[in-house]
Length: 81
Image (tube, rainbow, N blue to C red; front, top):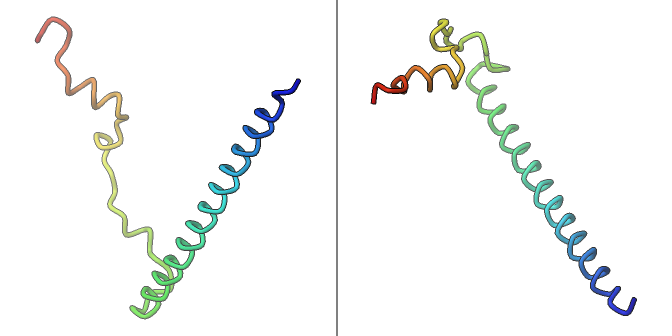
């Protein structure tokens, strides 16, 4: 029972690491929010209030294939190497 301080030390280190990570994550989120506001201001000065997501290109059925299907199609069949 005398070595319980190792356990307390380990918990302390874990909590410090968790709080440090959360602090870093909150700073990153704040910076992303600021950058998003700057981008919104740039779009507003160009005469657009919000981005028009309908401008995105349409995809055909071939481009919607899953990664697995594309990978399988690009590899030779077994025995054809």
